[in-house]
Image (cartoon, rainbow, N blue to C red; front, side, top):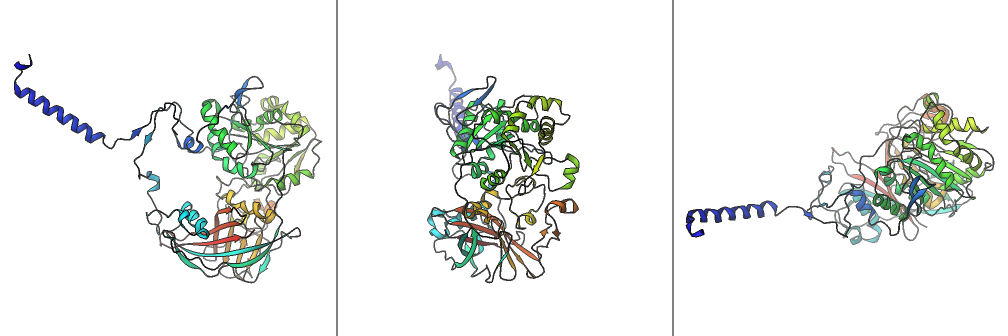
Length: 562
């Protein structure tokens, strides 16, 4: 039959087939590679890639019968939501949790970079930074931090070596004058080539600081938050800083837990375990509860997971941060935990108090003694149902006042931090905050790096020293140089750097002085810090150069010798 087909058609068919094959090979030669799932789990998102494999034998069970929760130190049936303070409404993050039901992921070509990484600052080249392992040991932290913080390829660098003199008798409010300047031997360094990097001599300065905090057991404290899965995942490093290995327990009501798979909850559980955090994840008491209502509702779960050792129940926002738990524990120890007690602080902004009333604001935390917590846990549903408000802080206040004779006890050192804009004035005022708040929403501050100072020398966090006649070090936050010297700078007042630093803040953190312009005050802000294996503290304070003018970043490294 085929012999009857004209040869011209056979030839044309062969040619057409050849063109189709060649075209297919050309079009799909650069196609992305797909991985079948099979028994191999491939990260399906940024979150799963960060988490890695979930632990084996994760137990899932119902909590108290009707609410499934992940036990093994984190109950996946719990729902974390943004613990909402009435003065700071919850915000949702932009990153999405791991996608479910994904069979494969696209693998980018080797060497390809995501579009978001293609931009660079003036003064930066697109050349790769050298791995810090190939640099001199003394420069590795600098190179690593310069890459992480996207500093210019060349920086102006100086350093100081601090010899701490530990003492139990330190006047934390005194600004000690150090006659010698902090800036010595500045040099220009190439961050792209550290093979022959020459660091300047490290001038040594003795500073008297408080004794380090002893390692403590804080099992008498239990903390509760309500937040979303995504925000809870993003907050693991911050929680690890102040909860890891402390004996304290965290109960997290995960608001969107019903949307998550057991695999996703397993990943999150592994993250908390890896961080040394004793955490339990629970779902909301009622699926109809708002995030702010869960902020109070989680108290019922906290009581269920408490023990005879539990003295204080702390209801927090999900961005409440403690540099260390010892100051909080010491402050609560001055109160009687065997009697009904409702402890916290007000907002620093009097307008917030006018709007919301006299109560413990959630960013600073609401702390309930064990007897009061047990009493209120039995009334959670009733208090939420009967209230005309849904804000968690108000629900707590109303439930306390209608079910006990306890009244708010103000605890000095707690801060709601209802400040927006530049928080420098707060952090440079020599305050001794037990907690921090709003550090990743109303303003930005690298609190984990900042609090390394508390790890090293306890209450030296934010302690101040004068250097020479024009510079102030606020330990863990900034090095500020004043063009006209310090003679006219009243360090007993707070610089009004943030928005609305007007009369509404005078009652709490005033008096204020006017803010300085950038021409009159040059600030090197702490961007990174680490505790070395031998116990030294290394801090990197950076003044960012003007990008449009191509100015170099300036770096001051403080090395605190153990």
